Amino acid sequence: MMKITNIVLCALALFVVSTILPARPKSRDDVGLKWLETNFELLDSVSKAIHAFAEPGYQEYKSSTLLISILEENGFSVEKGVAGIPTAFVATYGEGKPIIGILAEYDALPGLSQAAVPYRQPVVEEGYGHGCGHNLLGTGSLAAALAISKWLAQGHLGTVKLFGCPAEEGGGAKNYMVRDGVFDGLDAAFIWHPATRNQTNLNSGSATMTIDFTFHGKGAHAGAQPWNGRSAFDAVEALDYMTNLMREHVRPETRLHYAVTRTNPAPNVVPDLSVVRYYIRHPEVEYMKAVTERVIKAAEGAALGTGTTMSYELINSNYPVLANSVLCDIVCKKQNEVGGVILSEAEKEFCREILKNTGRDPEDFGNFAEVAPEVRPNRPLGSSSDAGSVSFVAPTAKLYVACCTLGGGGHSWQQVAVGGTTIGTKAVVNVGKIYYLTALELFKKPELLKAAREEFLKARGKDFVYESLVGDRKPPLDYRN
Ligand SMILES: [Zn+2]
Image 1: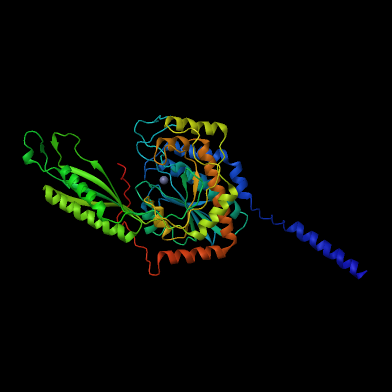
Image 2: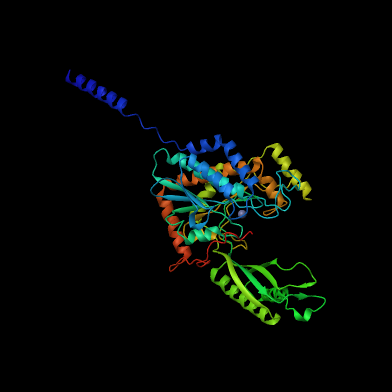
Protein backbone atom coordinates (compact mmCIF):
# COMPACT_ATOMS: atom_id res chain seq x y z
CA MET A 1 0.00 0.00 0.00
CA MET A 2 2.83 2.30 1.11
CA LYS A 3 4.75 1.51 -2.05
CA ILE A 4 1.86 2.44 -4.34
CA THR A 5 1.35 5.78 -2.50
CA ASN A 6 5.05 6.57 -3.03
CA ILE A 7 4.85 5.83 -6.73
CA VAL A 8 1.74 7.97 -7.11
CA LEU A 9 3.39 10.84 -5.22
CA CYS A 10 6.54 10.60 -7.34
CA ALA A 11 4.53 10.60 -10.55
CA LEU A 12 2.53 13.58 -9.33
CA ALA A 13 5.72 15.49 -8.41
CA LEU A 14 7.22 14.79 -11.82
CA PHE A 15 4.05 15.98 -13.50
CA VAL A 16 4.04 19.24 -11.47
CA VAL A 17 7.76 19.90 -12.18
CA SER A 18 7.35 19.20 -15.87
CA THR A 19 4.43 21.63 -16.14
CA ILE A 20 6.24 24.42 -14.21
CA LEU A 21 9.62 24.05 -15.98
CA PRO A 22 9.31 23.87 -19.75
CA ALA A 23 11.43 21.07 -21.15
CA ARG A 24 14.74 22.46 -22.53
CA PRO A 25 14.72 21.91 -26.28
CA LYS A 26 17.37 19.47 -27.31
CA SER A 27 20.26 21.21 -29.04
CA ARG A 28 20.28 20.45 -32.73
CA ASP A 29 23.54 20.37 -34.65
CA ASP A 30 21.90 20.83 -38.02
CA VAL A 31 20.29 24.17 -37.12
CA GLY A 32 22.98 26.19 -38.96
CA LEU A 33 22.89 23.94 -42.03
CA LYS A 34 19.10 24.29 -42.17
CA TRP A 35 19.41 28.07 -41.84
CA LEU A 36 21.86 28.17 -44.78
CA GLU A 37 19.63 26.01 -46.94
CA THR A 38 16.56 28.15 -46.31
CA ASN A 39 18.32 31.50 -46.71
CA PHE A 40 19.75 31.16 -50.22
CA GLU A 41 17.66 34.11 -51.45
CA LEU A 42 18.90 36.41 -48.69
CA LEU A 43 22.55 35.50 -49.32
CA ASP A 44 22.03 35.81 -53.09
CA SER A 45 20.63 39.33 -52.66
CA VAL A 46 23.51 40.42 -50.37
CA SER A 47 26.16 39.07 -52.74
CA LYS A 48 24.54 40.70 -55.77
CA ALA A 49 24.05 44.03 -53.95
CA ILE A 50 27.76 44.20 -52.99
CA HIS A 51 28.61 43.13 -56.57
CA ALA A 52 26.61 46.13 -57.84
CA PHE A 53 28.02 48.58 -55.24
CA ALA A 54 31.58 47.66 -56.41
CA GLU A 55 33.20 50.11 -54.02
CA PRO A 56 36.93 50.99 -53.88
CA GLY A 57 39.03 50.07 -50.83
CA TYR A 58 38.28 52.17 -47.72
CA GLN A 59 35.17 53.56 -49.47
CA GLU A 60 32.96 50.47 -48.96
CA TYR A 61 30.26 52.41 -47.09
CA LYS A 62 27.23 50.76 -48.71
CA SER A 63 28.72 47.25 -48.59
CA SER A 64 29.73 47.45 -44.92
CA THR A 65 26.39 49.07 -43.95
CA LEU A 66 24.47 46.24 -45.63
CA LEU A 67 26.51 43.52 -43.87
CA ILE A 68 26.17 45.32 -40.51
CA SER A 69 22.39 45.70 -40.84
CA ILE A 70 21.93 41.95 -41.43
CA LEU A 71 24.23 41.08 -38.54
CA GLU A 72 22.33 43.42 -36.21
CA GLU A 73 18.97 42.01 -37.34
CA ASN A 74 20.32 38.60 -36.35
CA GLY A 75 21.31 39.65 -32.83
CA PHE A 76 25.00 40.48 -33.31
CA SER A 77 26.43 43.48 -31.47
CA VAL A 78 28.54 45.52 -33.87
CA GLU A 79 31.47 47.82 -33.19
CA LYS A 80 31.81 50.15 -36.16
CA GLY A 81 34.75 52.16 -37.46
CA VAL A 82 37.40 50.07 -35.67
CA ALA A 83 41.12 50.95 -35.95
CA GLY A 84 40.23 54.43 -37.23
CA ILE A 85 38.75 52.97 -40.44
CA PRO A 86 35.15 54.05 -41.13
CA THR A 87 34.27 50.91 -43.14
CA ALA A 88 35.87 48.36 -40.75
CA PHE A 89 33.77 46.62 -38.10
CA VAL A 90 33.64 43.75 -35.61
CA ALA A 91 30.32 41.92 -35.13
CA THR A 92 30.04 39.65 -32.08
CA TYR A 93 27.56 36.94 -31.08
CA GLY A 94 27.66 34.68 -28.04
CA GLU A 95 29.55 34.61 -24.80
CA GLY A 96 32.84 33.32 -23.43
CA LYS A 97 35.51 31.06 -24.87
CA PRO A 98 36.38 29.75 -27.34
CA ILE A 99 36.28 32.74 -29.69
CA ILE A 100 36.20 32.01 -33.40
CA GLY A 101 36.78 34.83 -35.89
CA ILE A 102 35.77 34.89 -39.54
CA LEU A 103 37.25 37.48 -41.90
CA ALA A 104 35.10 39.26 -44.48
CA GLU A 105 36.31 41.46 -47.36
CA TYR A 106 34.22 43.59 -49.74
CA ASP A 107 36.46 45.93 -51.78
CA ALA A 108 36.47 46.03 -55.60
CA LEU A 109 39.21 46.62 -58.19
CA PRO A 110 39.61 49.54 -60.61
CA GLY A 111 38.96 49.06 -64.33
CA LEU A 112 37.00 45.82 -63.90
CA SER A 113 33.41 47.04 -63.94
CA GLN A 114 31.44 44.20 -65.54
CA ALA A 115 27.82 43.05 -65.77
CA ALA A 116 26.89 39.45 -64.91
CA VAL A 117 26.92 38.44 -68.58
CA PRO A 118 29.28 35.97 -70.33
CA TYR A 119 30.91 38.61 -72.56
CA ARG A 120 32.82 41.81 -71.81
CA GLN A 121 30.33 44.49 -70.84
CA PRO A 122 31.32 47.13 -68.29
CA VAL A 123 28.48 48.62 -66.22
CA VAL A 124 30.50 51.83 -65.83
CA GLU A 125 33.30 52.56 -68.34
CA GLU A 126 36.61 52.13 -66.45
CA GLY A 127 34.64 51.73 -63.22
CA TYR A 128 35.27 49.35 -60.33
CA GLY A 129 34.32 45.67 -60.35
CA HIS A 130 34.65 42.63 -58.07
CA GLY A 131 37.55 41.07 -60.00
CA CYS A 132 38.74 39.20 -56.92
CA GLY A 133 35.24 38.03 -55.96
CA HIS A 134 35.18 39.93 -52.67
CA ASN A 135 31.40 40.33 -52.89
CA LEU A 136 31.34 36.54 -52.46
CA LEU A 137 34.13 36.59 -49.89
CA GLY A 138 32.20 39.00 -47.67
CA THR A 139 28.88 37.19 -48.10
CA GLY A 140 30.38 33.69 -47.59
CA SER A 141 31.94 34.80 -44.31
CA LEU A 142 28.63 36.42 -43.30
CA ALA A 143 26.84 33.13 -44.07
CA ALA A 144 29.23 31.16 -41.83
CA ALA A 145 28.96 33.64 -38.95
CA LEU A 146 25.14 33.68 -39.07
CA ALA A 147 24.92 29.88 -39.22
CA ILE A 148 27.26 29.51 -36.23
CA SER A 149 25.21 32.07 -34.26
CA LYS A 150 22.08 29.93 -34.77
CA TRP A 151 23.87 27.01 -33.07
CA LEU A 152 25.20 29.21 -30.24
CA ALA A 153 21.65 30.56 -29.73
CA GLN A 154 20.63 27.14 -28.42
CA GLY A 155 22.50 27.93 -25.19
CA HIS A 156 26.06 26.86 -26.03
CA LEU A 157 29.07 28.61 -24.57
CA GLY A 158 31.35 30.29 -27.09
CA THR A 159 31.63 33.35 -29.32
CA VAL A 160 31.69 34.00 -33.05
CA LYS A 161 33.04 37.26 -34.47
CA LEU A 162 32.77 38.53 -38.01
CA PHE A 163 35.55 40.97 -38.88
CA GLY A 164 34.69 43.48 -41.60
CA CYS A 165 38.06 44.06 -43.27
CA PRO A 166 38.18 46.81 -45.92
CA ALA A 167 40.71 47.48 -48.69
CA GLU A 168 42.38 44.07 -49.06
CA GLU A 169 43.52 45.05 -52.56
CA GLY A 170 46.59 47.05 -51.61
CA GLY A 171 45.13 49.13 -48.77
CA GLY A 172 46.00 46.54 -46.10
CA ALA A 173 43.32 47.40 -43.51
CA LYS A 174 44.00 44.20 -41.56
CA ASN A 175 47.54 45.43 -40.79
CA TYR A 176 46.11 48.44 -38.95
CA MET A 177 43.40 46.33 -37.31
CA VAL A 178 46.01 43.86 -36.02
CA ARG A 179 48.21 46.73 -34.81
CA ASP A 180 45.25 48.14 -32.85
CA GLY A 181 44.54 44.79 -31.17
CA VAL A 182 41.24 44.18 -32.99
CA PHE A 183 42.00 40.43 -33.39
CA ASP A 184 43.39 39.89 -29.86
CA GLY A 185 42.01 36.92 -27.94
CA LEU A 186 40.97 34.84 -30.96
CA ASP A 187 41.30 31.07 -30.62
CA ALA A 188 41.00 30.54 -34.37
CA ALA A 189 40.65 32.72 -37.46
CA PHE A 190 38.92 31.52 -40.64
CA ILE A 191 39.76 32.94 -44.05
CA TRP A 192 38.68 31.81 -47.49
CA HIS A 193 38.93 32.92 -51.09
CA PRO A 194 37.01 32.35 -54.34
CA ALA A 195 38.98 30.01 -56.62
CA THR A 196 38.75 27.71 -59.63
CA ARG A 197 38.82 24.65 -57.34
CA ASN A 198 37.57 23.37 -53.99
CA GLN A 199 40.59 22.86 -51.79
CA THR A 200 42.41 23.58 -48.55
CA ASN A 201 46.12 24.21 -48.70
CA LEU A 202 48.94 25.13 -46.42
CA ASN A 203 50.82 27.32 -48.89
CA SER A 204 52.12 30.40 -47.19
CA GLY A 205 52.42 33.21 -49.75
CA SER A 206 54.85 36.09 -49.42
CA ALA A 207 55.51 38.99 -47.11
CA THR A 208 55.08 42.19 -49.08
CA MET A 209 56.07 45.85 -48.94
CA THR A 210 54.38 48.61 -50.97
CA ILE A 211 56.33 51.85 -51.35
CA ASP A 212 55.70 55.01 -53.37
CA PHE A 213 58.86 56.75 -54.63
CA THR A 214 58.28 60.40 -55.55
CA PHE A 215 60.88 62.23 -57.64
CA HIS A 216 60.94 66.01 -58.00
CA GLY A 217 62.83 67.47 -60.98
CA LYS A 218 62.72 70.72 -62.92
CA GLY A 219 60.11 71.23 -65.65
CA ALA A 220 61.11 72.57 -69.06
CA HIS A 221 60.02 72.64 -72.73
CA ALA A 222 61.40 69.36 -74.03
CA GLY A 223 62.03 70.75 -77.53
CA ALA A 224 63.04 74.36 -76.89
CA GLN A 225 65.29 74.14 -73.82
CA PRO A 226 65.59 70.62 -72.41
CA TRP A 227 69.00 71.50 -70.89
CA ASN A 228 67.17 73.64 -68.36
CA GLY A 229 65.11 70.68 -67.19
CA ARG A 230 65.81 67.74 -64.85
CA SER A 231 63.37 64.94 -65.64
CA ALA A 232 61.61 63.30 -62.69
CA PHE A 233 60.65 60.52 -65.10
CA ASP A 234 64.32 59.89 -65.95
CA ALA A 235 64.77 59.16 -62.26
CA VAL A 236 61.92 56.62 -62.35
CA GLU A 237 63.50 54.95 -65.39
CA ALA A 238 66.92 54.87 -63.68
CA LEU A 239 65.39 53.27 -60.58
CA ASP A 240 63.47 50.69 -62.63
CA TYR A 241 66.64 49.86 -64.61
CA MET A 242 68.62 49.28 -61.42
CA THR A 243 65.95 47.07 -59.85
CA ASN A 244 65.71 45.06 -63.09
CA LEU A 245 69.48 44.42 -62.84
CA MET A 246 68.97 43.55 -59.18
CA ARG A 247 66.68 40.63 -60.04
CA GLU A 248 69.71 38.45 -60.79
CA HIS A 249 71.18 39.14 -57.36
CA VAL A 250 68.27 38.45 -55.06
CA ARG A 251 67.00 35.05 -53.93
CA PRO A 252 64.75 33.44 -56.56
CA GLU A 253 61.51 33.66 -54.53
CA THR A 254 61.82 37.48 -54.52
CA ARG A 255 59.23 39.40 -56.54
CA LEU A 256 59.69 43.02 -57.68
CA HIS A 257 56.85 44.84 -59.49
CA TYR A 258 56.36 48.49 -60.24
CA ALA A 259 53.83 50.81 -61.89
CA VAL A 260 54.23 54.50 -62.69
CA THR A 261 51.25 56.09 -60.99
CA ARG A 262 51.95 59.75 -61.81
CA THR A 263 53.91 61.68 -64.42
CA ASN A 264 53.26 64.24 -67.12
CA PRO A 265 51.68 62.39 -70.05
CA ALA A 266 53.01 64.80 -72.73
CA PRO A 267 56.34 63.70 -74.28
CA ASN A 268 57.24 67.32 -75.08
CA VAL A 269 57.23 68.32 -71.42
CA VAL A 270 60.18 67.56 -69.13
CA PRO A 271 58.20 66.35 -66.08
CA ASP A 272 58.96 67.98 -62.75
CA LEU A 273 57.13 65.24 -60.80
CA SER A 274 56.88 61.46 -61.20
CA VAL A 275 55.73 58.76 -58.81
CA VAL A 276 56.42 55.02 -59.10
CA ARG A 277 54.78 52.42 -56.83
CA TYR A 278 56.80 49.33 -55.92
CA TYR A 279 55.72 45.94 -54.55
CA ILE A 280 58.61 44.03 -52.99
CA ARG A 281 57.86 40.44 -51.95
CA HIS A 282 59.59 37.47 -50.37
CA PRO A 283 58.25 34.59 -48.22
CA GLU A 284 60.48 35.68 -45.30
CA VAL A 285 59.79 39.01 -43.58
CA GLU A 286 63.46 39.74 -42.82
CA TYR A 287 64.61 39.08 -46.39
CA MET A 288 61.77 41.19 -47.80
CA LYS A 289 62.93 44.04 -45.52
CA ALA A 290 66.57 43.65 -46.68
CA VAL A 291 65.57 43.82 -50.40
CA THR A 292 63.46 46.90 -49.61
CA GLU A 293 66.55 48.63 -48.19
CA ARG A 294 68.41 47.88 -51.44
CA VAL A 295 65.58 49.33 -53.57
CA ILE A 296 65.58 52.49 -51.42
CA LYS A 297 69.35 52.81 -52.03
CA ALA A 298 68.74 52.44 -55.78
CA ALA A 299 66.11 55.22 -55.60
CA GLU A 300 68.63 57.47 -53.83
CA GLY A 301 71.14 56.68 -56.59
CA ALA A 302 68.55 57.40 -59.29
CA ALA A 303 67.88 60.84 -57.82
CA LEU A 304 71.59 61.61 -57.51
CA GLY A 305 72.33 60.62 -61.10
CA THR A 306 69.44 62.59 -62.63
CA GLY A 307 69.74 65.77 -60.61
CA THR A 308 66.36 65.26 -58.95
CA THR A 309 65.27 64.77 -55.35
CA MET A 310 63.51 61.72 -53.97
CA SER A 311 61.18 61.00 -51.07
CA TYR A 312 59.40 57.73 -50.34
CA GLU A 313 56.33 56.66 -48.42
CA LEU A 314 55.48 53.21 -47.09
CA ILE A 315 51.95 52.45 -48.29
CA ASN A 316 51.42 48.92 -47.02
CA SER A 317 53.23 45.86 -45.71
CA ASN A 318 51.88 42.36 -44.95
CA TYR A 319 53.20 39.31 -43.19
CA PRO A 320 53.11 36.04 -45.22
CA VAL A 321 50.10 33.80 -44.56
CA LEU A 322 50.85 31.18 -41.91
CA ALA A 323 48.30 28.39 -42.39
CA ASN A 324 47.63 26.15 -39.39
CA SER A 325 47.68 22.45 -40.33
CA VAL A 326 45.53 21.33 -37.36
CA LEU A 327 42.76 23.72 -38.43
CA CYS A 328 43.22 23.16 -42.18
CA ASP A 329 42.94 19.37 -41.73
CA ILE A 330 39.54 19.82 -40.04
CA VAL A 331 38.41 22.24 -42.78
CA CYS A 332 39.52 19.70 -45.40
CA LYS A 333 37.48 16.95 -43.71
CA LYS A 334 34.41 19.20 -43.55
CA GLN A 335 34.85 20.32 -47.17
CA ASN A 336 34.84 16.67 -48.22
CA GLU A 337 31.65 16.09 -46.20
CA VAL A 338 29.93 19.11 -47.78
CA GLY A 339 31.26 18.40 -51.28
CA GLY A 340 31.81 20.75 -54.20
CA VAL A 341 29.64 23.34 -55.93
CA ILE A 342 27.01 21.73 -58.16
CA LEU A 343 26.14 23.77 -61.25
CA SER A 344 22.82 23.65 -63.10
CA GLU A 345 22.77 23.21 -66.88
CA ALA A 346 22.12 26.96 -67.32
CA GLU A 347 25.08 27.81 -65.07
CA LYS A 348 27.34 25.43 -67.01
CA GLU A 349 26.21 27.10 -70.23
CA PHE A 350 27.15 30.50 -68.76
CA CYS A 351 30.68 29.19 -68.08
CA ARG A 352 30.91 27.68 -71.59
CA GLU A 353 29.98 31.06 -73.13
CA ILE A 354 32.70 32.81 -71.12
CA LEU A 355 35.27 30.25 -72.26
CA LYS A 356 34.20 30.59 -75.89
CA ASN A 357 34.61 34.37 -75.61
CA THR A 358 38.05 33.86 -74.08
CA GLY A 359 39.24 31.51 -76.81
CA ARG A 360 39.37 28.41 -74.61
CA ASP A 361 37.87 24.94 -74.69
CA PRO A 362 34.22 25.51 -73.64
CA GLU A 363 34.14 22.28 -71.62
CA ASP A 364 37.25 23.17 -69.60
CA PHE A 365 35.50 25.35 -67.00
CA GLY A 366 37.32 23.98 -63.98
CA ASN A 367 36.37 21.55 -61.30
CA PHE A 368 33.36 22.92 -59.45
CA ALA A 369 31.86 19.60 -58.39
CA GLU A 370 34.80 17.78 -56.81
CA VAL A 371 36.99 18.50 -53.82
CA ALA A 372 40.70 18.44 -54.67
CA PRO A 373 43.16 16.81 -52.24
CA GLU A 374 44.60 19.06 -49.54
CA VAL A 375 47.92 20.66 -50.49
CA ARG A 376 50.56 20.04 -47.88
CA PRO A 377 53.26 20.60 -46.79
CA ASN A 378 53.57 24.34 -47.08
CA ARG A 379 55.04 25.68 -50.34
CA PRO A 380 55.67 29.43 -50.39
CA LEU A 381 53.86 31.32 -53.15
CA GLY A 382 54.50 34.70 -54.76
CA SER A 383 51.09 36.11 -53.89
CA SER A 384 50.25 37.90 -50.66
CA SER A 385 47.35 39.11 -48.54
CA ASP A 386 46.95 41.27 -45.46
CA ALA A 387 45.30 38.20 -43.89
CA GLY A 388 48.96 37.14 -43.38
CA SER A 389 49.26 39.66 -40.57
CA VAL A 390 46.20 38.13 -38.84
CA SER A 391 47.76 34.65 -39.19
CA PHE A 392 50.67 35.86 -37.01
CA VAL A 393 48.34 36.74 -34.10
CA ALA A 394 45.85 33.82 -34.25
CA PRO A 395 45.94 30.22 -35.58
CA THR A 396 44.43 30.55 -39.06
CA ALA A 397 42.48 28.18 -41.31
CA LYS A 398 42.41 28.66 -45.08
CA LEU A 399 39.85 27.50 -47.61
CA TYR A 400 39.28 27.80 -51.36
CA VAL A 401 35.86 27.28 -52.92
CA ALA A 402 35.16 27.07 -56.65
CA CYS A 403 33.28 30.05 -58.03
CA CYS A 404 35.53 31.29 -60.85
CA THR A 405 35.59 29.71 -64.22
CA LEU A 406 38.90 29.07 -65.95
CA GLY A 407 39.92 31.42 -68.73
CA GLY A 408 40.21 34.57 -66.71
CA GLY A 409 41.53 33.72 -63.28
CA GLY A 410 41.51 36.27 -60.49
CA HIS A 411 41.42 40.01 -61.24
CA SER A 412 39.62 39.55 -64.56
CA TRP A 413 36.23 40.55 -66.02
CA GLN A 414 35.36 36.84 -66.23
CA GLN A 415 35.59 36.58 -62.41
CA VAL A 416 33.32 39.63 -62.03
CA ALA A 417 30.78 38.08 -64.44
CA VAL A 418 30.60 34.71 -62.62
CA GLY A 419 30.64 36.39 -59.19
CA GLY A 420 27.39 38.18 -60.02
CA THR A 421 25.44 34.97 -60.66
CA THR A 422 23.96 32.15 -58.57
CA ILE A 423 27.20 30.20 -59.20
CA GLY A 424 28.82 32.59 -56.72
CA THR A 425 25.92 32.28 -54.25
CA LYS A 426 26.18 28.47 -54.32
CA ALA A 427 29.84 28.86 -53.32
CA VAL A 428 28.78 31.28 -50.55
CA VAL A 429 26.41 28.66 -49.06
CA ASN A 430 29.12 26.03 -49.44
CA VAL A 431 31.59 28.19 -47.45
CA GLY A 432 28.93 28.76 -44.80
CA LYS A 433 28.43 25.01 -44.37
CA ILE A 434 32.14 24.13 -44.28
CA TYR A 435 33.02 26.76 -41.71
CA TYR A 436 29.85 26.04 -39.69
CA LEU A 437 30.82 22.37 -39.36
CA THR A 438 34.45 23.29 -38.62
CA ALA A 439 33.36 25.67 -35.85
CA LEU A 440 31.10 23.03 -34.26
CA GLU A 441 33.97 20.56 -34.16
CA LEU A 442 36.18 23.17 -32.45
CA PHE A 443 33.46 24.20 -29.96
CA LYS A 444 32.96 20.56 -28.99
CA LYS A 445 36.62 19.48 -28.87
CA PRO A 446 38.79 22.04 -27.03
CA GLU A 447 41.79 19.73 -27.42
CA LEU A 448 41.84 20.59 -31.14
CA LEU A 449 42.16 24.31 -30.39
CA LYS A 450 44.92 23.51 -27.91
CA ALA A 451 46.83 21.57 -30.59
CA ALA A 452 46.27 24.38 -33.10
CA ARG A 453 47.70 26.93 -30.66
CA GLU A 454 50.74 24.77 -29.91
CA GLU A 455 51.50 24.50 -33.64
CA PHE A 456 50.93 28.25 -34.11
CA LEU A 457 53.36 29.20 -31.31
CA LYS A 458 55.99 26.83 -32.68
CA ALA A 459 55.61 28.13 -36.26
CA ARG A 460 55.99 31.78 -35.20
CA GLY A 461 59.18 30.95 -33.29
CA LYS A 462 60.07 31.05 -29.60
CA ASP A 463 60.93 34.74 -29.26
CA PHE A 464 58.41 36.09 -31.74
CA VAL A 465 56.94 39.48 -30.93
CA TYR A 466 54.45 40.96 -33.41
CA GLU A 467 56.02 44.03 -34.96
CA SER A 468 53.76 46.22 -37.08
CA LEU A 469 55.32 46.39 -40.55
CA VAL A 470 53.34 49.58 -41.23
CA GLY A 471 54.90 51.32 -38.22
CA ASP A 472 52.71 53.97 -36.63
CA ARG A 473 51.32 55.43 -39.86
CA LYS A 474 47.60 56.06 -40.20
CA PRO A 475 45.50 53.79 -42.52
CA PRO A 476 45.87 55.21 -46.07
CA LEU A 477 42.13 55.94 -46.39
CA ASP A 478 42.60 57.91 -49.62
CA TYR A 479 44.96 55.45 -51.37
CA ARG A 480 42.47 54.95 -54.23
CA ASN A 481 42.16 58.70 -54.99
ZN1 LIG B 1 41.07 38.65 -53.21
